[in-house]
Amino acid sequence: MDNVKPHVPTELGTEKVFTLLVRYAVPAIIAMAAASTYNIIDSIFVGQGVGDMAISGMAVASPFMNLSTALGAMVGVGASTVISVRLGQGKYETAQQVLGNTISLNVIIGILFTAICLPLLDPILMLFGASEATLPYARDYMRVILIGNMITHSYFGLNAVLRSAGHPRTAMYCTFLTIILNTILDPLFIFTFKWGIEGAAWATILSQAVSLGVQLKLFSRKSELLHLRRGIYKLRADIVRQTLAIGLSPFLVNSCSCLVVLICNNRLLQFGGDMAIGAYGIVNRVLFFFITIVIGLIQGMQPIVGYNWGAHLNNRVWAVLRYGMIGGSIITTCAFLVAELIPGVVVQAFGAGPELTSLSEHGFRIIAALFPIVGIQMVIGNFFQSIGHAGKSIFLSLTRQLLFLIPLLALLPEWWGLDGVFWAMPASDIISFFVACGMLVWQMKHIKAHTPTEKAKG
Image 1 (cartoon, rainbow, N blue to C red):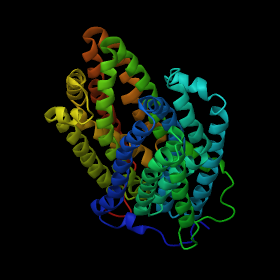
Image 2 (tube, rainbow, N blue to C red; image 1 turned 135 degrees about the vertical axis):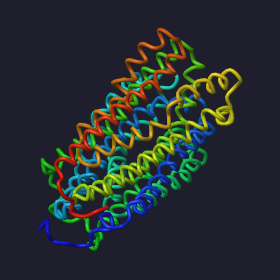
Image 3 (cartoon, rainbow, N blue to C red; image 1 turned 60 degrees about the horizontal axis):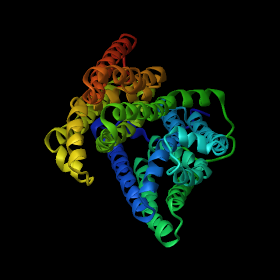
Image 4 (cartoon, rainbow, N blue to C red; image 1 turned 180 degrees about the horizontal axis):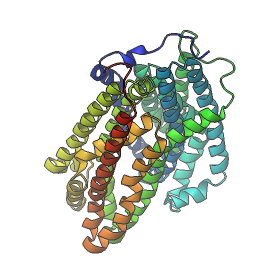
């Protein structure tokens, strides 16, 4: 049945690569940037409606919530990659099975995560830094998030699959729908219904539930290449293994981010006090905005790379990679220019005082010193993920945040104090960049040596 040909997004293998990349990446970039911007707005609603301590409670809960979201993204990213490759190979029935397994996996993982974490919620939040004052807020927020965890997993998982199924704009619209509904429900639940921080959590879950309904309605259409039907939900060991192996890379990135934030905050507190932690918090939030744009670019690249890799159109694969590295570098270079030329303008937008502003500007310039190469390193790492080389992608994901940064955070501050904490980040960036480039060069030589002819030219 794999050779039965329904409607397939064949433009992935025929249309100009740059045009495709713009069509697929721009919606993802807009969605990621909007989602990043919304996180700031969400904090404003909670701060105005509940108070400063509630914001601290959300800050404690955020890494834990991100860990939960990362599980759903792990399934979604892995499944979308497998689907893209199978579509490129013409194995449409297998791609259909991946869709069904994606839904089943997200439901199972979502329920298990809730069942394990809900009884242990207080100890987990204390581990993430909750105090007696912030624990009630963090608990109220995360209890609701965990109750709706299965919805969150399924929403993120199917949104990734939408892009591989040839619907990047629909994926963007679902993200926009979630953001708009959340923005409407937040003040309604917090200010009108007086639900406090729990209102913010319910706004998040209900918004995702509506968007999930839109996704399921789309996948219910029999005219779609990938659509819901009987017989596709039973888990297949080969699909589960491939999906989780490929999706493990972004999950580890998010997990490592949580660990690095904990370690980094401890070193900042040791060598610079609370102000240093506040300064890093401001810098990290600004830089993360640019990182999310690169992630959007990568999400747009993934189905194009996966399809053409599966179809053995290597010239087109290299073209996507080349454009992706250029685009990633341009995005992170913009972050570098902001940090070096107008750091004060950005920092003052957060309402920081003179001491915090000065420290933030200083840290901003150091941390972003080599940021232009970060975009390239991210694109290369996710390129390996898109062609199904999960092990290499996982390794590159770990290098920048774990294998290099943590030892540097241990060593450099002992010599240079607070500046050593700041410089550990660009030092990790440059080492990771050279490792990624070396692996990419080797991979390209290996592929060319084992590919005497190509089915089509890019």
